[in-house]
Length: 190
Image (tube, rainbow, N blue to C red; front, side, top):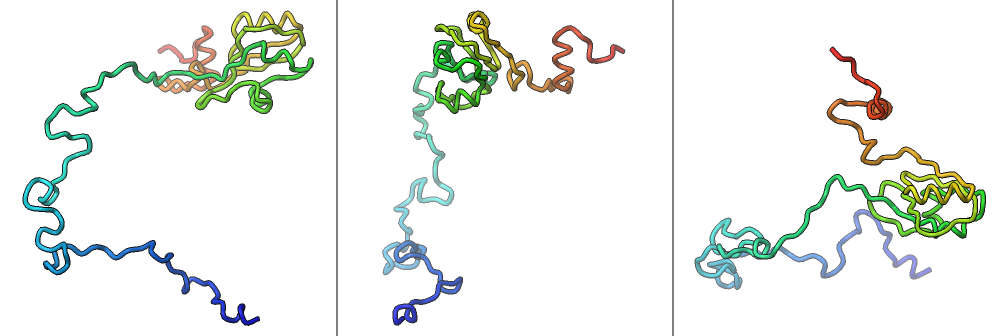
């Protein structure tokens, strides 16, 4: 009981930073006795002794800076579309009658998850004997053939790919855009 009586109850009024975690601000330019008087730790004259006298990061005094000296290669394609890919051979062990989609592949660790991917693409490398239903954004022709020859189904699901982005120029909805792409007129001719 003695310990509990001596122990202080924690509250907003008893909170304080840990010992040594905070320091007083160094006051410069306050006399020679302080150790940082007169020039206030900046030394004598020169650009860095002046008010606002620092150079931007990467500036090398007029010398050709490092970021301009080194060679550059390639570019970043902002329209690049990244898929999570899987080969038919990786689906060989999947039991017949199973529906394989993006979630199934991730759950069972059949393919490595790629950051920034928009969906599943099935490639035709390998063999398949079980009749399974595969739902993906894209199939290669060979993958589709292999799945259908095994008695399964290859279902293309609509997704957020480069063809189904909202058409900003005409402000079309997805259905209107797909109809216009397939040959139908979506806007009245004036």
